[in-house]
Amino acid sequence: MDNVSLEVKTGAIHGIIGASGAGKSTLLRLINLLERPDMGTVTVDGKLLTELPDKELRQQRQRIGMIFQQFNLVGNATVSRNVAIPLELAGVPRAGRIKRVQECLQFVGLADKANHYPAQLSGGQRQRVAIARALANNPKLLLCDEPTSALDPGTTADILGVLRHINDSLGVTVVIVTHELDVVRSICSEVSVMESGRMVDFFSRDEAGFLPPGSHSGSYRERITGRTGEPYV
Amino acid sequence: MFESMLKYQDQMWQSIGETFVMVGISVGAALLLGLPLGTLLYFCRKGQLYENRSLSLILNSIVNVVRSFPFLLLVVALIPFTRLVVGTAIGTLAATVPLSIVAIAYYSRLVEQSLLEVPRGTIEAALSMGASRLGVIFKFLYVEARSGLVLGLTASTISFISFSTVMGVVGGGGVGDFAIRYGYQRFETEVMIYAILVMIVLVQLIQFTGSTLARLLDKR
Image (tube, helix red, strand yellow):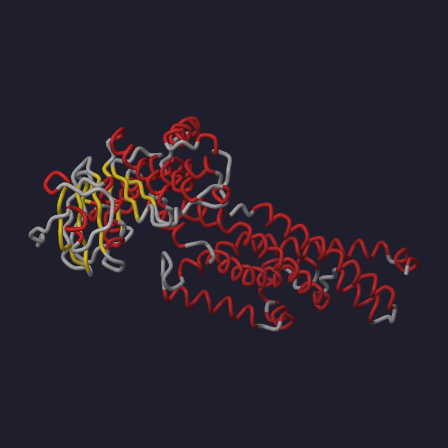
């Protein structure tokens, strides 16, 4: 990755799109420092993460939710236990945890599956559990790494609906890494395009307007907005 | 056979007791020290969370050296150390010292293997939630690897039983020693078979318990 600068507005749903190996996931992992940059800084919600000592970085990470393509749930833990783990890590007392787990599962519509194990759920349901887990500590920012790439189209729409709902009702800023154009077209308010480790384009729904889902040809900008434009430096 | 079973009933019970003490203490050592050692082996590996080449090299060498010793020679080589720890090199308690050392080395390898089977994504999710080292270990790694850890301990326990059979050389006793002294050396074949049957039952029971527990624990 080379000389990439990304600024995500508070309250936005920001899409990062590009071909495989373009560095999208690396960029996302830089935001919560799962990946450390050799040079440069990362600031989230006014905090300069790259300067923080280990303990404070962990505390900041508790306020940044993350979901993954393969869900990454703990398979040997029940749904409610999966959601409770981040609360335990944040030191929330037991009574508070039980209440919050309930709330989060209700939010993603899985309150009735609390005692199931992830293996007993469908892919879409597992991703909902992962979302509930990511929301447990009331994050300001939700990072999504190819959240719908392992799901069928119907389930994809479903999960995107949940993400939009999180953004609308909780005001959580969402960053989504994806290679699926329809994901960007349907929920993102702004888009960054990456290519071999560089940021090659940026545009927002306000300035360019997005096409409805469907297939087009040309650059990512053309395919998403239907218009050509001056590539962003 | 029933005659000899009756004749040596007391000795047999005592031998079983000695085997339990030796194997029990070495299983305890495996859990208490082998589990952390295995976890350390895992974390220090190339590409893992706390990659550390020199520590990895040192730990791996120690584990390999202990495991490559012919067990009987390790028992002999450790006599001074055993004396230091329990005050004597003879007897059941003394026998647990070399047995525990092998147990720690043996189980740590199996722990390392089980932990390697936990998907990387699970660790990544843990880190993204701000988990500390201990948080990653106890709330993610051990939870995901638990059935493998149990199966590893089961296999280890059975190996420890096998190792414990030669402990007669330092007066450790146990079922194996009983089979050799009363059965083999005194040409009482029936007694030998009797002792071997006891060992078979013991091993079957342990394997059955371990396999069942591992199956019940695995929800993935």
